[in-house]
Length: 216
Image (cartoon, rainbow, N blue to C red; front, side, top):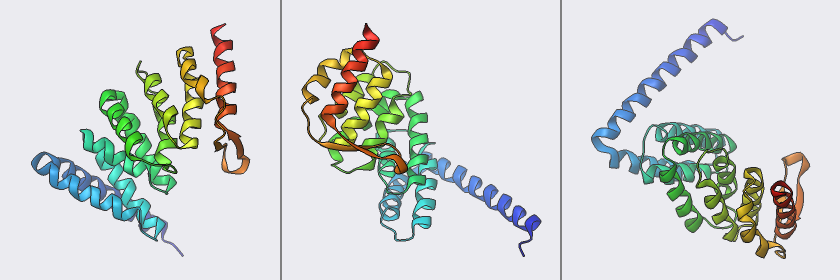
């Protein structure tokens, strides 16, 4: 039988130790930032390939939390790499940290997203996650940044961008949606238990209609 009191003490002790090490590593960034970032890049790449999903999630979540305390283009790229992991828990943490950075340093994150659009290919989870993270950022450049997703080869990324552009309600993006009306690429939308296939063209047509109604 589990000794609940003892286990709670151990849990609290482990949390205190984790916070101490986290602070220690954050301070280390001031002394040797390049070494820390090099180590983190290697850890992220290795963790994404582990067969042990729990261990992979532990490493990626810890890395994302640490990255959230730092700043710079390489930090944004590293967080997007975590967001591109196949593990939902890791993506959730990376997304939260990226959103926090975007609120404080939107331009830095925006440039990282633009780089991601160039370096990430079809099937990259981050391309689908990013639009939903960006749509909540109160910056005038969000609409333009989301519009850049419309030119990507990944149908799911395009679908996510269309949906978030409708949420923003910016009718000025209509001219970029018009060429997509005949796009036959298929995207899977919805939650796991209620997924539906829809073409990019169908989404674009629906989005245009919704934007026109809002603008009326």
